[in-house]
Length: 230
Image 1 (cartoon, rainbow, N blue to C red):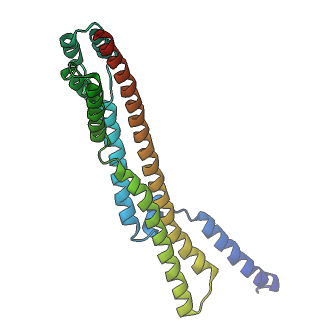
Image 2: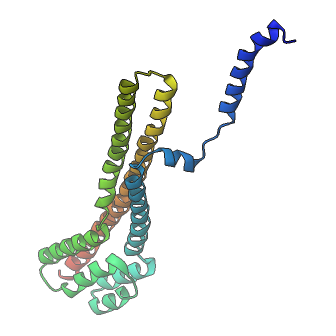
Image 3: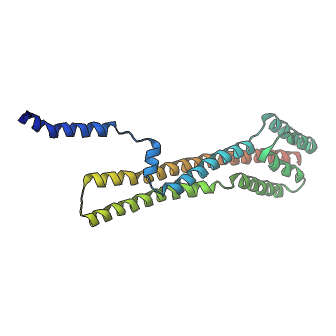
């Protein structure tokens, strides 16, 4: 025969079982992604593009801005000694934008100094533009990805409140469950945006350092040319 105490304990036992069930539920990353909605597809595509651009441009910029110390030293020494042919030969052992910029400088070394200075600046801008190609796409992704995430979240919230208005059922479980699923898109968009933003600025900092370096080198070699013409 079932006692009254046993009957009274049934609701508490059921509640304990529900708590244990909830505690034992673990969502994998894949489960979260699947619950994020269709808006995660374009966000996922943007993440692939961003990672590819960061890796590809980092390799290109690192290779393009690399300066071999021995090549640089020999080139500047021959310019200082007024030996442009030897300077050109020394420069050919190098690579990248540094070689392209100062090879052009040597080919115009007999022109007026102001003209040579202008030529160096123009060639430097062209070479940096080549290295900078497609980096601005990272800036676009950094702005677009978070907005796509917010769009996914807002559309989900609208759907939740529409269902509440239709069913006239205000349940914390329904609201919280639907809301956390839609917040996944916002989180994903922000993560992709942060990756693209950081990549964009890291790459631009590498280019800025190279530009500053080339300006200092140009100043040195032009001073050597002026000294040789006195």
